[in-house]
Length: 345
Image (cartoon, rainbow, N blue to C red; front, side, top):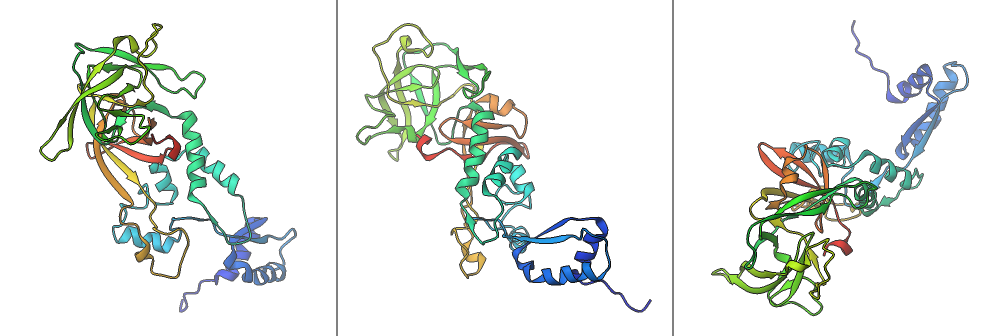
């Protein structure tokens, strides 16, 4: 009645393992010097053999990731992130909210294995496992993060074009996309002064609109700041994707687009590592926090993305892997992982 006594960890740990029939108790390396005491307790307490064993392993450290629960709690408490399930957090809830497939995490853990020595695993290895999974399983769609209007001056009416939902799947299927002759393309896919061997659109140049037609830029409308406001193009009817008719018109580049009449406004959330450095130097973690770990942009997306169920992953062509979610009524496309650099353009 007078004393409130709790057993020490070094006593409770081995005794509870022995009582519960634990065969192997896995601990991180800092408990290595506790093992003699662990063994002494289970041997002296008179438990029947086989006795439990303590085995130590190195913590999993991933470059640019903050893995300490103490520091992660500070990020939550100080409002650096939205909570424990923020997509930037290396927690199970955070990875789930980001849209990381469980199979990709299992593959990553299998590839990394268990080590006794301290090491840092590159985040690129985790990203690669996520990317490989989504490349096979995610449907394709088109979105434009930095939109500029492209008007086809010799096109009237509207039609549907056929789009491959997932060319990596055995039966990926197809779907129809509305095409009305006025579309949005990404500003990065047009150049007023193109460099040599530029494969996208410029004045006098041609490019193929994915699953649609080849267009040629005839003129450009600039705003008062000299920025491109609208691109005026001619299309070539004989170049329709999937057509059996041969055409002498060729284009080296293929770009994504969103129809101006049917596209929907979307908020794009892109994520960068929480830490600005890859290693763990002896400095205050606050000095290493990446203040630009979340980038919010506004663009255009296909209506099929808006109509899909929450959490569904997509490969946005030439952009990255994103999942659809609604946040207080706002249509959000949240980045899961980027495309490989070689596929960016």
